[in-house]
Image 1 (tube, rainbow, N blue to C red):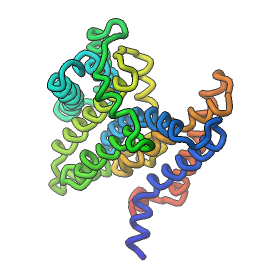
Image 2 (cartoon, rainbow, N blue to C red):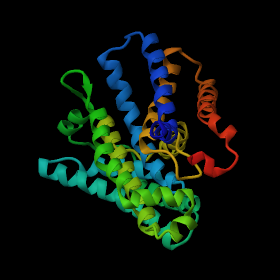
Image 3 (cartoon, rainbow, N blue to C red):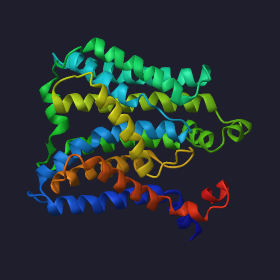
Length: 326
């Protein structure tokens, strides 16, 4: 019984994010003119996975008690890079994909190195690097353009077996290949320990620097996967400053909605994924109910505030921070 109670307490944020997403998606499909159809699900999935990848990237950094304001710009940079490299022969496409993912990981590693060895606050460091990454994106794509291998793009954004969105399958594969091994590794456990209390983690002999560096590097990699998928969806690259900023802010909202504590040490990337899907569904609801665009930001903010407040009800009975982990 205690094991179930501990598991529920640990996964409470993720379960709440799942519940919010399911309820909102049911309302969305019930009121959509096409109803619950394969095309509706595929469209929602393709839009949702973009934010899901960026939200996962943000979650990894937030778990270490940091914040990454450059994830949206890495997302934009890799979108522009993919529109140049991911084309040509199958071999060229393969090397192009590897180069894009490597570029994202390098950007994340640079963020980690500045935070760890430069001893700068994550928010300051990533604002600066985000500006640099956007400058590089703008240098690559002064105007929108480029192309991408259509065969690969269609395979990863289409339907499997005629009904299953390939983008969701890819998202699940990334969770299993990237997040699960990290969460179960020594560095992953150290990342949670650092987020809970860095001095205590240091006194316990945890590999603090390795945990932070790995978290930031994987964060950059996940942002690059999101940028790659944006190229697959749009068949082009664009250095859009507003889009990069929006994805950064939305990723933070998705992380909070997914039950990841901004204080660090609590939550999971899976919760962030469902937080992202729920946040995207809020936008879909606005379309279905034909809300006036002037009122849409207000509606999104109210729904998000209510959802986060429901997730935070457990804090009302907490007398000290240790009880939150009990």
